[in-house]
Image (cartoon, rainbow over all chains, first blue to last red; front, side, top):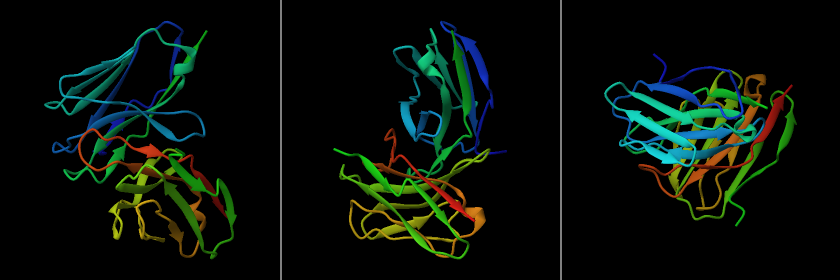
Length: 111
Length: 114
C-alpha cells in the first residue's frame, strides 16, 4: 500500500458545484495532515492544515478520520479559479521531518 | 520579504556534468528540504535539514549532496548528472518541524539532462 493515495481524477465540474476529494494514508503514527494546491507548472502552496476535529476555511472543509486513516477535502460553490491539482500531504514521522505527498487530484471547473 | 528563492529557473546539463541548485530563504526558517517532482510520481524528498550544520537523507538521495552552512541557504549539488535526474526540483522551508507547520516552496528549477 502506497503511503498516501488519492483519487487520480480528473474531476470535471461546472461552476457552483460541490466536489469532494479523498485521501488515505498508511502510517498510523502520522500526526500532521495538509492539503496543498498546485497550479500548472507552479510550486505547491499550502491550502489548509487538517485538524482532528475537522476544519473549515471559507468554501473549503477538511476532515480527518484517524481510525480509517482517511482525509477529505470538500469544495463548495466551485469557482473557475479553483481549477488546479490538489495534493494530500502527511507527515511520515513524529519528528515532522518528512512530509509525504500524494500524487494529486486534478480539478477542472468550467463555466 | 522574498520567501524562498531558487536559482536557476531552467537548466540544461550534459550527462556527467555537475552543478549546484541554489535555494535561499529570508524567513529565518529552521527547516529546509529539497523535493523532486516527476510526472506520475508526485513529489519525493531528496534531502532535508533541521538547522545549520544538520542534514539528512530523504527518500531519493542518491546522486545528490547537500550542506547547510547558514540558516538561509541550502544548496543541492548534482555530482554527475544523469538523464534520470531530469525533473522539476523544489526547495521548501518551514519555521520548524512538527505539527501543523506547512511548507513554503520556491518556484522550482526545471532541469533537463541530455
